[in-house]
Length: 290
View 1 (tube, helix red, strand yellow):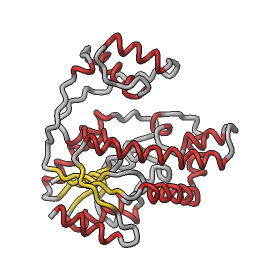
View 2 (spheres, helix red, strand yellow):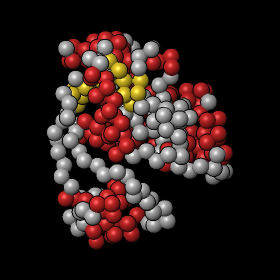
View 3 (tube, rainbow, N blue to C red):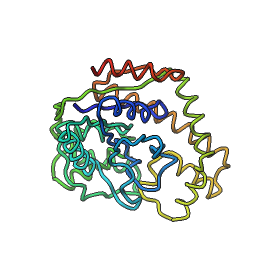
View 4 (cartoon, rainbow, N blue to C red):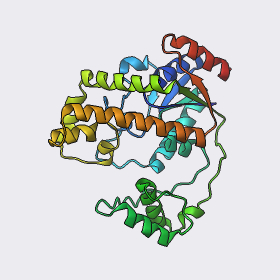
């Protein structure tokens, strides 16, 4: 069985994944699009060696920040790891907040190799959306969703197929159970604020400065919350305190989007986290999985 742990940032997914792996003879597979890259540690809240507790972890920290790692690549790599772990008689445990990665790996979706990765940096979103309408007048993509618009245009360039005509399926390739961790929204936001402060204590500013000085503005660096906000500070367009507040604000917005996505896209069983006694939440999840 494949176990999937989802939820917003700062809710305890890493700790839960390790505890379930210990209890259920499992190995952990990363399902966070930012944690595949080397050197992006603090801002992405990447699991530390100490936190791993000797549990095998896969698809973490194995790509260079200059590489373009796509959903297609993740689908292939994750399915290979799932098969490897199942053959050993163990349980794969996917953990992370990137919903598209999870769905691509576990559902019978077909992706083409990401050979067309044009980003249209100097083209306004409204113009791109008009271009998409010319290709696909039935598109359901929101006019402001730049990432999806670009993905649809590139899909058409690669395949010649109309994006909205892509066959979608809700067929799972493996027996799966989806675990969602949640908590009161105000508590979550406070935890996000506290975790941001801790990240600065751990050296987030120095990590971001090192990346800024590389003069590389790759997708890997600009996707995680934390770096681009501090880049604005390094460039002199905001104060350090303003950058820190922007990180907290963007993390809170991201958590809200994660809830919406998971509630609409996959059959999650939600568990309210007991932060004062996390063992209670672990037992609740184990009882559900039994």
